[in-house]
Structure formats: structure tokens, C-alpha cells
Length: 313
Length: 291
Image 1 (cartoon, rainbow over the protein chains, first blue to last red):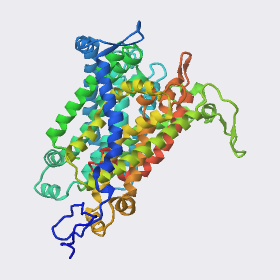
Image 2: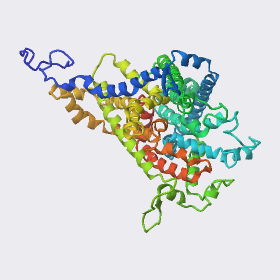
Image 3: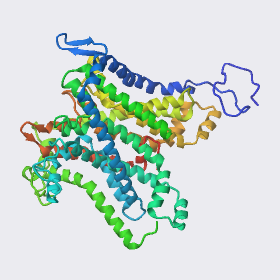
Image 4: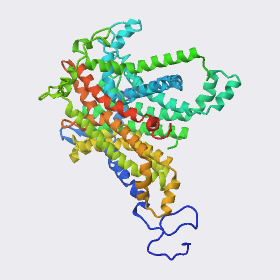
């Protein structure tokens, strides 16, 4: 037994589980977790916290053309933010975009997941094909739908007019009432498969016994779905909602390539509005303020969501 | 659920139709890349019965597809010569992936095997960086990069893309390390091995599949990223998603060329995504859901 070995230069540093078994162990540099975490922490400090503080700094300044530089303006940008009807408009667009896409993608995703949850031949291939939409750059998806929704040459207005669901010029993206729906279509096409894949994985992991007992007791498919499938899938659904909700709220690519916010302000999302204020209108400080506001909303809402649903990583 | 043969056939039929609807825009985009200019605007659209040709690809990549004789590189290239932009995309994606995977592997090993004070909060902080709207990073980054001369450089874009992928990589790799029993480490520790030896000789090799899957996902996210490249580059580099918006010109949009570039950008991503099917759901849910 090494238990009573004299304390030498190699002092036991590592705490082993269970008393009385540990021989004295050499101490290594890599015993400390901080060595392992150092590159990550450095990266997060330089590329997450520093920009965050710089952004806060910017939000209290504004670019002054006469000085060709920043000037301290105090709370002016924040005052402006809350008085700016276009900001509230873009927040409204962002929220309706997020909630509508989320609702449609969940319902559609769940329906398709139930359809594709089968061991029959060919279903694996079908699920594989669905994953392809996920890796297309969203900017290129935006271009695809720009062409397909073109008022003159587009496939979608052509089909819609063909079945009588649409009349007039066939304009989607230049029609203020339809433009947001046109952008949402691209999002729904690209990201419903995301929901499908996650839901299928959740459905496949469900235990079979409760369903067999329910069937013996004469439960209908709908009853089983509402009483068994949905409750057992709640964690899976919560994760999907969290991740998709975050990405929807900060959406930029589709509106940037498809509509640039137009017509008028019909498709301005917060991200696009912040970006344009900074880089198109040279309101550096105000753009930073809007982006901070978006950051604040999303971090607060997402954290409440994680807390309420008790998600763990 | 028990289904009759008829029900099973109907179900399979519906499933094929639904998936075909989702696959259709991709097929349509591919046909645009191979169509002669005039057929792009034909209504009803020509889905197969047109003169398939490589003209758009030749213009975009400056390569003449003289088949059998082999490839011949055209001199110069026109307005839409995009081969260098493809190289830019590859350089950025490869190096940012390497960087984030190396950093994340080290960090997630520690998060999986050792205890730090406030571990839960730290993991949550990492997750929170995944929530930041890219625009809230891109705006300050533009000014910071301008001050440090990193604007419009490979290293600048690579660093930002690495940051963007870090939360995914850390959380995903942690879940892969958590799958490997900690008893293995403890046994080796008792034998006097250092943490780094254990990591290098035992745990990392066992997690190789997970590390590869993580790398593939990082590559794809960097490959498809738009906002950072749009904001932080000017002339010396541009990745494919950003440069495709330059096909929209005042004299009209070069749809055929844009589709050709888009198809070229999709293909590597398609191949990669098929490689990680087994770990895809775990990756998309940041490691919280295992298949």
C-alpha cells in the first residue's frame, strides 16, 4: 500500500474517486480543465464579448459626416429606437414571420414525419432526399424562389393562376400583402425538412408498449397521437422550436436577396433594418442599437424558454 | 400500427409525392443551369425537353467541356468568372472548420471529463453565443476589423466563421465524449497517464466518428454562411453565396450563370450531408438529441 508514502516532490494533485486507492500521482499541466478551455475562452472573449461591448459603445455614439468620425450622443440612439415607427414595424414583421413560419413548419413537419416514420422499403431514401434542402446556402434558395415567384416568368404564379387561386398580374414579391408570404415560402420549403428529421428521430425512439396497450384498449389513432405521441415528444418538439425559433428571429439572407425589405417596408426584419441603418444609411450607432435590441430580445426569450421547458445540455 | 397492404401502398405513394414536391425546386434549379437562355423563361416550364448544354458552366468557370478530349481552360473569363470565388469558399470553410474543431475538441473533452466551478453556467454561456443574431456581431466586427486591418482578409472571415461554429462544435462534441465511459479515463489515470495522453491515445480516437461528423457540419455552415462574408469582405475575397447576388445586374439577371454556380455550390454540400446522415439529427439539435 502506498497510502502512507511520504510526501515527496510529486504531490498527488488529482482527486480520484474512492478513498484509499490512490497511489501518489505525478502532477501534469493538463490536469487543470482551464488549460483545455483556454483556447475556447480566448476565442469567446475576443470574438463574442469584445464585439458585444464594442456594440454597446457604438450604441452611445453616432457617425458625424462633418467630423468623419464618431461622436458621443448619450441615450439618443435608444430614445430614437423606441420612437421609431419603422423599428416597431420591423419588429412586428420579424415576430409575425417567426411565429407563422414556426407554426407552419411544426405542423407540416409533424405530418410529414408521421408519414415517413416507417420501416418499409424506400422510406430511408425518402428521408435522405429530404435532408438535401438543409445544406443549400439560404442566399441561393432565395434566388431560386426569386425566379420561381417572378410575376412574369415564375412557375408559382403560373401554377396558382392555372388553378384559379390567384388573379391579376401574378406579382408576389412586389405585392405588399403577399411579399412576406413569398419569403416565408422559401423558408418553409428549406426548413420544414429540418423539423421532419428531428421529429422522425423522436418518433423512432418512442417505446412501443404504451401504443400496444392503447390499441388493445380500443384507442383511436387520433387519441393515441394526442395522449401518447405528443406528450412523449414534448422534449423533442421543445428543442426543435428553440433552435428554429432562434434562426427565424435572426433571419437575414432571404429578405436581403429576395426583397431587400420591400415593397415599402413590408418585409423589413430587425436584422435587415439594423444592417441597412449601419451600412446603407451610415447610421453606425443606430444600426448597432437596433442589433443590440434584437440580441436582447432573443437572449431573454430563449433563456426563458429553456428555463420553462427545462431543457438541458 | 397494423396496416393493410393497400394502406401501405397508398402511404408509400403519398410519401413519394410529398418528397418529390420538396425535391422539385432543386431539380428545377439544375435544369436552369443546363438550359439555353431563352428556355429559362418558357411557360409552361420545360422540365426535360430542352437542349441540355454546359454553356452556363463554361461561362462561370471558364472551362470548356470538350468531352473525350478532356478539359480545356479558357483564357481570361468574362464578367461571371467564378473559379477564384469557389477557391475562396473552400479556403474559408476548410480553415474555419479546422480551427473550430480543434478548439472545440479540447474544450469539450474538459467539459465532459472534468468539473469546473459553474460548469452549467459555462455550458449555457456557450449556448447563448449560438443565440446572438449574426448582425449584432457583424456590425461591431466590421469596425474592429477596420481598425486592425483584418477587413477583407481570409484570416478575418475564417476567425468569424470559426466563432460562429464553436457553440455547435463544443456542445456536439461534448455529447460524443459523454457517450464514452469515463471509467476508461479513470483506469488510465490510475496507471499514471496524463490527461493529454488519455485524450490523444484513447478518447479522441474513440470519438473520431463524432469529430468527423462535427467537422462536416461546421464545413457546411461555413459554406452556406452569408451575412458575415457580405459584411466583412469587399473585393479580395467573396464566397459563393455572396457572389451569386452579383449576377443580378441592371440589364437583367443572369439566371443560367447563377444557377450553374448554385449547382456547383450545392454538390459538395449534398455529398457531405449524405456522409453524416447517422449523426445529422444530433448535430442539428446541438447534441441534445441522439438518434
